[in-house]
Length: 217
Image (tube, rainbow, N blue to C red):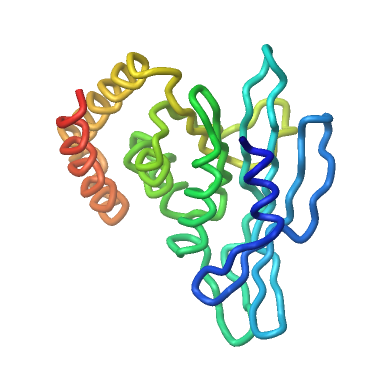
């Protein structure tokens, strides 16, 4: 499935009048791994946006995954300045690749320059109610891991991992766990008092999550 995602993003797609495409596609460390350099192009100019690494999987041992890293949070394309975080380009790329990520498969997104997500994870807010985590939750990811200190120093910067559930039983179990973590966050919200802006943003998402989960489990 991810092979089709690579083919499509290599051809490119126009979003908000700007072409989003993979300019360079190269072989990774393994035969099943591909590196993509994602660019934006408009008005006769282009700018680098981020790197995406795609692993197609190796049956029956390893499932596919996708990684976003080296994100350029602000760039000029023609006469426009694009701020990646919270933009239609962030939403499009996360949503696009997530459509090709199946049960038990993963996405890794570097957040070192994502100030809101970084601070929320740093102070112990549950991943699913952080800025980035909530986006992944809405895309069907129900298990999270915060790689705040990558092992071996070979995995790049801080990143949030999201994984899709293997089946409906796993999904319901993971949703219940997210619900419990979210309730605990809201109950103990006063302990985050000095970080009010970050907490208020997360609290709004927490209430949405609880409302969504209540209709599913």
